[in-house]
Length: 344
Ligand code: PFF
Image (cartoon, rainbow, N blue to C red; front, side, top):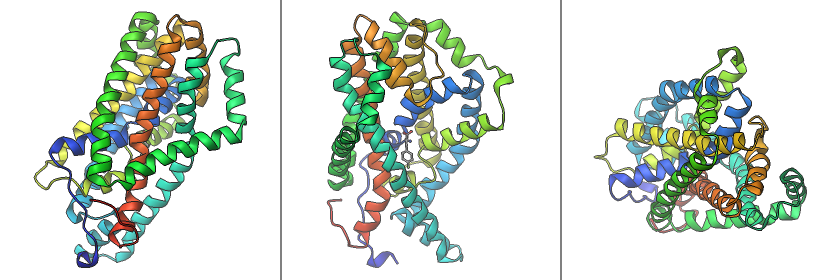
């Protein structure tokens, strides 16, 4: 099978895989999704369930995906096919690779719209005079299909540019710039929240579990969040695993990626909730949490015109490093069967 497939390159150095996989894992799911879900599902108890799901279910699945990808060094479709053939199973196991690619494209269809909103908010937040309240502004922005289409298209063009440049010149080069930038921005936001927000209140909201609020729905939501946040089940991590150097150890690497991803989600909570509480806003406003509640706070605070755009740059950077990984499994498949050509 492998003879007819065009081969891919390998990441240079072991940190490239860590950066790329963390880039895939850290995204809107951590900075937009995790805080709003924790906020709506009662805080501490959700956070605890989420951590357990990451450790007990997410981490083993991540190890398996990387293992399958690295063994064959091909796209998820061909990796699954090879794993099945090597263990005398039906080659229809490659369907798992296909469903991953389809799911990735479906996710990208809404992911790019929210990421486009983040790009738009970099400018809206910098220009906001606070005269129009953040809720009305969010409604206006989300009701304009032309605006949504424009920002979604800009975001998709950025994603396509990176993926089409290939594994080394595109993805590897991009994550080496984006990830340190993201880490720096996030630490800056947390320090800002410690100095200007109600940090104690945020700590107790995130870390004092109230189990009376837990039901089967909370568990499902925490599990879904863990899978989404670690980029599992979509072939992204399997595709990146195919470019991992053979000598790199999978267990400790997966542990590092999962820990960094979790740390970013917790830091996002610690950056957002102190500000939400300091301005007397509710943590449970759902998907609009960062666009409405947080923007309301940015409108009222002294350096909000700097903090706001910085926060939305952070979100956009995180979204870009994830969206390239959503497209990579499909692009890797098309380039190995010779349908697309790109640099390795
Ligand atoms: N993990 C990304 C996030 O938390 O935003 C989203 C994601 C990327 C999901 C890649 C799935 C995937 F394959």
